[in-house]
Length: 134
Image (tube, rainbow, N blue to C red):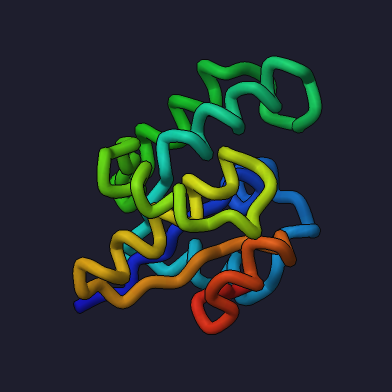
């Protein structure tokens, strides 16, 4: 079974814009030709917000969405009841959207998948440090 790589918002945005702040290990995981990339819908929504505010080299939300939809390796993961319930246990993570990203990774892990979380966020890494790649 292939490892599912859960993308946080910065991993997605920095990969798409070619930003050197994307960690080498995260970039390598994303660039695998057969990578199984999981994009929580909340991370996509946050990325769209960042693009709208002009805080990225991605020119428009339409360009962001086109890039995501064009990459067949990316599975946009919905916000499900199970993910929501998992997020309620993550009280050490102060940001709601970050809780939902980590909850997506933990939910997939509980379903028996091999999972990594591609994030530079040290707060997220404290929940399951063994899952984090950057």
